[in-house]
Length: 239
Image 1 (cartoon, rainbow, N blue to C red):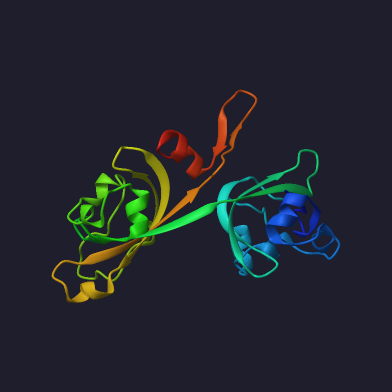
Image 2: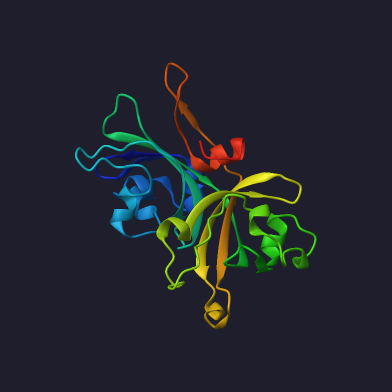
């Protein structure tokens, strides 16, 4: 847990768990003017303001709620650690925010499908995620049986171009037994598909385990915010 200055991003207070997570002593983070933004893996400063829905208000320097965005933080030894990050302005303190970083386990799987959504191949990680008995089970399977809402690029004269909204997607995966779980996926062109009659695509699938969730409600019990992965985990669909 970090308490940070929303205008400067300096770390004001940090607890022992955060120090253990990143390998620092509290005085190294609090007394040396370390900026919270510098602990994020992406050094592009635009990334800090684009982590989620207007995390920082550039007009007055205040920070707005960030709900469970999965980002990478940098350990003292340089190792990148995926965490689920929550940031919220502290009531009554316009210049202070509370940031909670929870380590998550990231699993990455690969599938290759043709333009019709038929699975050509898959790796062992995908086999484990979707709980299939053997890699042969993937061959000839319709990918919508395991990722029902996936959107594949339409076949066109320029198969090398994949629109951004298709290239990166958040969806729900499904095991052979029907158990649903949230996933992130990226679609890219299969390099060898240029010589094939039917275009093929590589699917890179990310799954984050041990995610906690936070539902923010107002005084009338109306939900104001719920992060994507948590809503998928609870309801198998977007909130």
